[in-house]
Image (cartoon, rainbow, N blue to C red):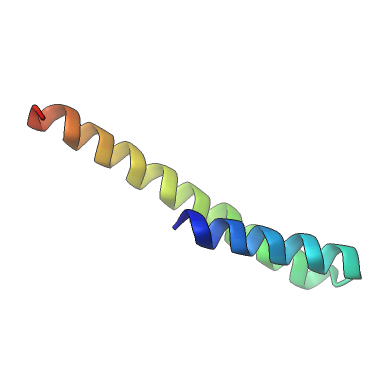
Length: 54
């Protein structure tokens, strides 16, 4: 998931440099959404690991 975030971020940066504002904003918002999903899943995974006693 982190790769998708980085991919959308790079697309947003390139689109912003080339002047495609709408595409850059869309890619940046997708990068944010995927990043927050990644963070939530990471926290859930860490909590499950702590509670399982490994």
